[in-house]
Image (cartoon, rainbow over all chains, first blue to last red; front, side, top):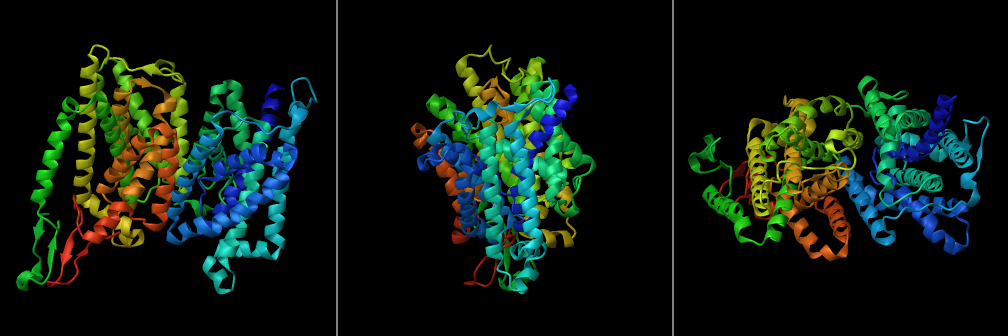
Length: 290
Length: 350
């Protein structure tokens, strides 16, 4: 029964990782860009939810209604300016630029809001949970985050499959030149994909702030987990990302159950193991491999 | 490879191929004076300045190694702090076994090179950005594993033994000299490496990987060699870091900030040049010392500067200088000189 609880906690945690990772996956799939500032964008969203949305007299629980669209807009603008400019140079530059951004963002947050931990205040909801048995407990917040991850992934799948813009995104992702020849404005499509990625990462950042404390440097470690989820699940597969997130979450919970020190280590070891025996991931194609 | 080569077309003085645009004597004399001055520095400059110089050397070592990885072999590693940390801990381990910490430096470097080999087997399965983040996973994993080893101080850290029987000024002088010698070996070694056959392959990869491959260059083997050498160099940097700041802690030795600094410094100075990382390090330390009172703003300014350089001046400050004045301090390519008055072009231009 203890082990069942470990698995359940792992699945709940995995939902969060998948939510965090889907933007990363989308940015790579369409733009072929690894945004090394991905984790930091989530932390910025959480800071905005804690420090800026209260000025609008919106309870922090509902802050995502404002922050998520705002980040969509920011994503479009950042893509059309900074990221597009570095894509025009070469993929190498995008790594340098996004890593530079990541360090700059972290240190600005550090100067502005100190290194103290913050949380997105959701009142009494944080302590509420469901106890089917005496050992198993399911926190409502974690369950809501898992549900959000599944909903976001399903909406993304539907969007990519059935809408005109979604088809354009897939076309550009498959073959940019061919899509361009057929009249697609790939810069705009890139902007839309970045907008979706930033919106989902803002949601993930606020979810993170609800579940646990965050600080200016929280972005890095979350990027690491998101990345591990993507690789374990298989690069380029949206539902693979969910499975990868869950596998990572379960591995981490098993590690933590043995010794709290082993939580992150267990996840990293699973990642390295997947890299060693099945580098394309559980559901991936071999495109990201050298 | 002599410094002046005269190929067949030289009989009319039409085309000359040379290493250097100026007589190498000047570089040699200048370098010798600099080497003597920096070797006696701790006895003539204030102790505080010697400490700053020492940190400067450590950054030069790391940045030179990072430049070799990214600037020449095209591998953006954001996990080099793995080897800085492992080098520091290798020194600690050997010192705990009773070795003199100063003697352990080459062994720490060697240990990091040995560890790097199996790491390449895993990491080279990924490319581009995925390779980058995977290097970070490796660094994180190394830090977490070291943190569980009680004899090395676990997560809380441990003091480096073997330095306590020296007087404070002796410790300061010796660790300065050790750092300086390692920096000199790393920079000169990189220079020699880049003028070797492997250097030629690396320059070819830097300029055009596909063309290099089709010309028969073994890109993968060259990358592997560079990764191992860079790991050893960063390990040596970690070893001297552990000696100069002898309280060894996972969160300090494996700090992500090392990766950030080496990346920014190489970018600003100029990727794919030997002088670039050194110049970038000078700018970094001037900025850091000037903005010392302002918290971490120097990192914000430096990071913004680095992003701007990457976007608008991707060859960095030294690259821009070199293109403008056709001059290099440590030439690794060749200059092809046409008939008098014609423009000089440099081979292996990035």
